[in-house]
Amino acid sequence: MAVRRRGRLPDEVRAAAVRAGMSFAFALVAFVVALFASWAHTGLLTPALALMGLGVFGLAWCLIDVVVSRQVAASRRRAPNSADPLDGSRERGGPRHR
Image 1 (tube, rainbow, N blue to C red):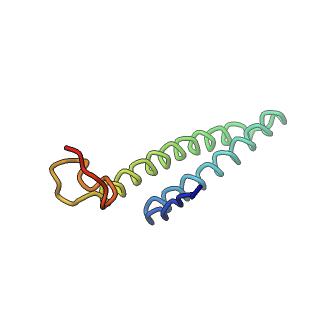
Image 2 (tube, rainbow, N blue to C red):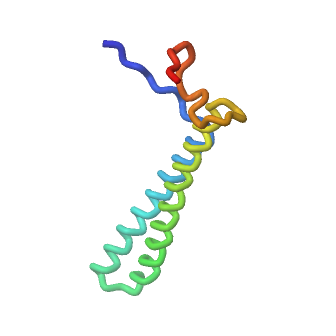
């Protein structure tokens, strides 16, 4: 059984995925700081919650960026200036049914 390897992600998609990973790490650290601040009943809770909210917003933004970057990269792989959105979406040499 042959395993088909995936190709390398385009640079803009990889960069967006790295940003999403960094944003996830920031949100996770902010969550842990907010959790410990709430357990300790310190005044650090409010800024930690604000940073956690910013981290979640940034994470959502980065995930949307990943989705959009993947869509742009997929449209670049298709045939340029084609009227049919599926032109160029099949592998070359395969049968075409119309």
